[in-house]
Length: 198
Image 1 (tube, one colour):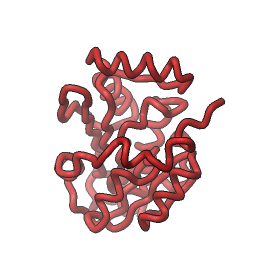
Image 2 (spheres, rainbow, N blue to C red; image 1 turned 60 degrees about the vertical axis):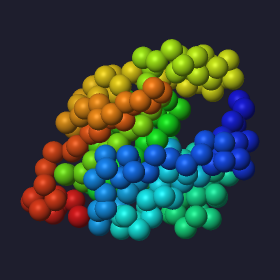
Image 3 (cartoon, rainbow, N blue to C red; image 1 turned 30 degrees about the horizontal axis):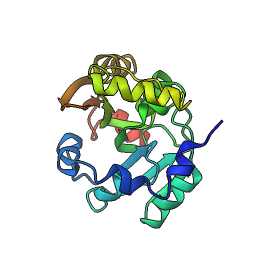
Image 4 (cartoon, rainbow, N blue to C red; image 1 turned 90 degrees about the vertical axis):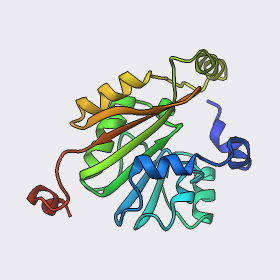
């Protein structure tokens, strides 16, 4: 199987360009003092712009060349599948998955794992191409032809995955190509359930 992301690592940030940092800050409700997980975050293209807005950042991915670029940005980089993270329950206050959910082996399992490692009162933000758009369907077809094994889901299906994993969720924003879906884990940071996980 072709390792597309290791091949793309040297030029990935330049090709995709900078993220919509202002929107991400607003939807994640940053700044925050706790830890942020960038799941499937590759080079840290997005989370690198969030340094100083959280207590610390961990990037997980399966591509070692991508993670090496994240390390050079001063981010903690961990090789791990999104469906089986090497972190205790309730490790993160914020989690982002940007343009990566469709690349995970099992989307439902990955969302359940995000819920597990998210603290009560924490927030998950998923930014994904919006499958309801014709342009995204063309991208999905192109990725299939490139044998990338991608599985795209419409925003409402992602909301459903979050709710099945115990989060309240909604489509927070859309544009002509993408959708941003937020999921909030029930509980308050000051609650007894929260203190047991810290």
